[in-house]
Image 1 (tube, rainbow, N blue to C red):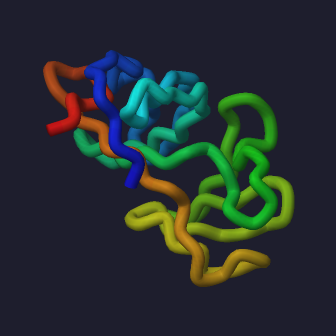
Image 2: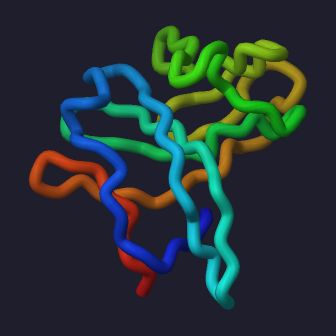
Length: 121
């Protein structure tokens, strides 16, 4: 899991369709003065949101087929490049060229109808 050292508003919960996904660009601070500009995929189910780096572990390419547009089917996220299929709940690749690998999860929290990167403890 990627650790962050800043609290940042990513989007409103209502910006993510229930059962759908949204891409957001942000900067992850990884400690020791280092930071990375990244794209995150936010997956919503009810009031819960899971976040992963928007990068397929197979080829290091984005998962969306167009900016912010994702292939979702039966609680699976499908990479638009090579068809790698990931379980929404834990990011595990269950089909395709990166079977057995996981998407990199990023910790987020939902509060007051918004999605945030939390403060590192």
